[in-house]
Length: 452
Image (cartoon, rainbow, N blue to C red; front, side, top):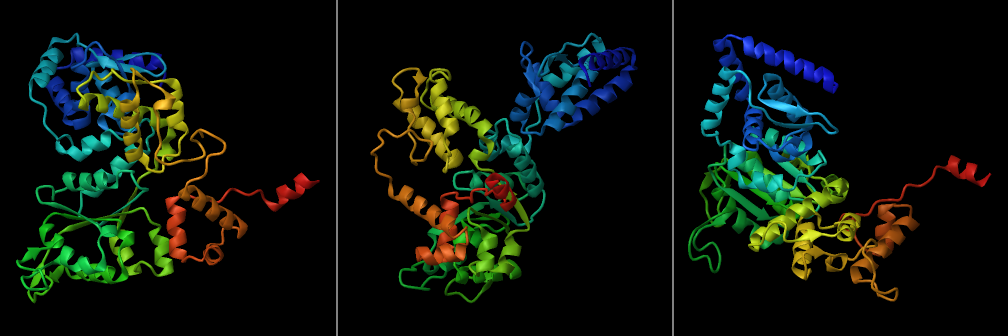
C-alpha cells in the first residue's frame, strides 16, 4: 500500500468515525483496544506524544512479529488515534482525534490502569526481550515459547552454550498455568550417577551413610510445577532408564524407601549436544528421546544473527552503566570497537557478549570504548594477534589438528575418530564445542571445467 492510498484510506475512515453514531463508535473503540497488542501500542504512543517510532522499534519493544505490529498500528491509524509519518521506513506517532466523542473514549481508556499481562509480570520475559535485536529469528522463538506455554507438552530446547536456554525454560514456566508452583533446575552434566537418584528422587533417613534426615528430591519439589533438565545429553544410560520410568509411570520411590509417590510435573530439557547423533550411536535412548522431544525450540547462535550484535552490545552497555549508577550515555563504543565485536565468532554467544561488554566498559579510561579496550576470552582467527610469533593455545592447537584430520578423511567421522584415537562420541562433542563445519567443495564437473 503506497503512502497516498494509505492516507486516503485513513481520511475516509476518520470521516466515517466522525459521523458514526456514539453507541457504534464506542463499540468499535472497545473492539479496537480489546487486543492486548493494540492497547499496548496505543498506550505506548500516547505516553510519548512528541516521538515517532518505526515498526522495527515497536517489534523489539513488544516482542512481536512484523506482520502483527504492522496490522495493529495501521488499525490505530485507521481509527484516527495514531498517525503515519511518511518516509523510509514509515514512522508512527500518537494523534489527538478531532472527534470529541473519540477524544472522550481515548482519555477514559488512558486514565484506566493498564492490565498487567502475564508476560509483563515475568522476569524471564523481560530478560529475553533484551536478547531480541533486529533479526526476526528471536521473535519467532518468542512465538514458539508462547505456543509451548499453553500446554503441558514436553519441550526440548536446543542451542549452543550461552544462547539463553535456561531463560527460555523459565519463560515457558512463568507463562504457563504451572507458574504458581516451583521451577526446579538440574544440571545433568554436574550430576554423576552416584548422586543422580538422591538428587532427583530424594532419600529416606538412614538410606545411606550420612542420610540423617529425609530429603525430598527435585521431582517431588517440582510437583505441579516444572522440572528443567539442563544438558540432558550428558545424562548416563543408567540415569536415562530411571528418568524414562518416571516419565511413563509418573511415580517414583525415594532412595531407601518403599512408598510409591505420585508426581505431576512438566518436563523441559535443554542440550547443546547432537542428540539425534547420540541416538544413532547408542549414547542416548531412542524411547527417551521421543519423550523429551515432543516440542523442540532451537535458539540461534549469535553469529547467525550478526546484525544484532551492535544492538545487543549497546543494550548491555546501557545496563552496565545503570548498574554502576552512571548516566546511560556515559560510555559509548567507537566505530572500531563495534567492528571488532561484529567480526568476532562469539563461541560463548549472548553470555560471552555481555561479559565482554562489561570488561570493555570497565577497562576504558574515557567515555569512548576503543578497540584496544575489547578483550576476548577465546582466541580466534578474527582476533588481532599482538605478534606473528605468538604461540597457539592448547584449544587452538587441538581445534586445528581435528580440522586437519577431518579434512584428510573427507569428514568421515568414524575414520577421523580412529586416526585421532578417540571415541566417536568425543569427536562429536569436539565438533560441537569448536563449531566445526565441512568446507563446501566444488563439484567434479566444476573441477573439470576449471582444468580445461
